[in-house]
Length: 119
DNA sequence: TTTCTTACA
DNA sequence: TGTAAGTA
Image 1 (cartoon, chains in turn purple, orange, yellow):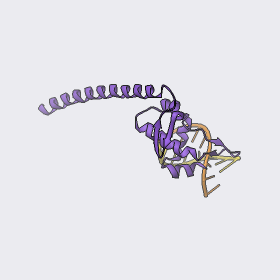
Image 2: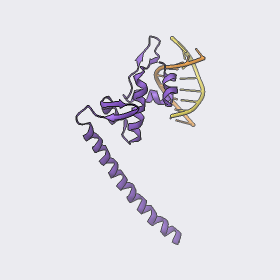
Image 3: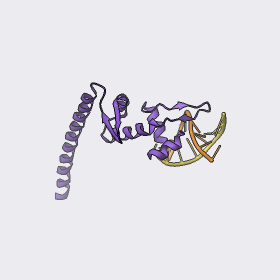
């Protein structure tokens, strides 16, 4: 199918679909006219990409884990590849560290604001 | 008409 | 990400 069809079926813009390809997340074949030709399975792949993106994973990590995700009637299920669970936990720890930094910033900002109100 | 690439807001 | 330009 052409890019517009995939965009329509996934709700992801054509621009973003091309970006996903640039990031190595999708590999559509090329027609003789240069147009991208997406397989039916790409519809599911795009959903998985969105799910992984929502989980906060960077595209570079998703590119390496995508082929380990299998679809369980609409739900992306991380499995198959050994080490995938470890990668996900590693990402979760990275995000936890991020939260810690943000909370620190949040407290610092609160302190500045209270000082401003006092002035 | 639709898509492609590249570049800019 | 959206959009414009110039093609195929």
